[in-house]
Image (cartoon, rainbow, N blue to C red; front, top):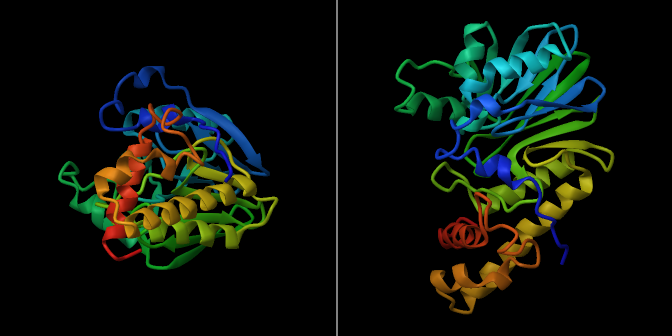
Length: 294
């Protein structure tokens, strides 16, 4: 089996509720050129995708609200155009936290219908700000900045509202949190995610692209086609291992404790400081597979 090097765990670990709003003053937004007019922004939370051109700035996700000013400043280093369009890949706060700030500046927000529902139902959002204005069910096309952007919903993957965003001309794919590069996946079962859906999301993404595509993952460094394919292999391999253990009669406690089910991809030691550790991912797989949905 292919061994994964454990990369970039700190970014997502630091984006959990315990750490999300600590030391925001020290966060630096890094601008990484991806291909042609596409850039990736890394800071605290989910990776941001940015397309710049004559139609204005098109942004994918926006991290946390306290970082909006820094994100705007980073974007100004590559374009003087305003952020006119924003797509949320899913509803989690490290990807949608800045929605209300950009909304106030006239940014038009898009997302899957389930993203709007979950943000609208969030008890913390008492003012109902930052909700997507345009929603879709299956897919959506945006013709901006010289590219025919394809936004595709992948259901019950990381959550129940995930979207993949593909730029055919630039040959860049943003996966949202259906791809954690170099890490175990985070499958939010309470948010509508599932093992089967996460696997299908990776398969869908790989069908959209080719071996030269550059991939912006939800978390982790800029990725290649091979990185993405290896990630799918990990998702499927862990599923096979956990299902075999379940069929052999192993209890949840035994599966959670059995590092051999996942160590061929990432060891427990390598993942011990990550948001999703070895025991956590084994528990997630057991719970998802036990629901007879996978």
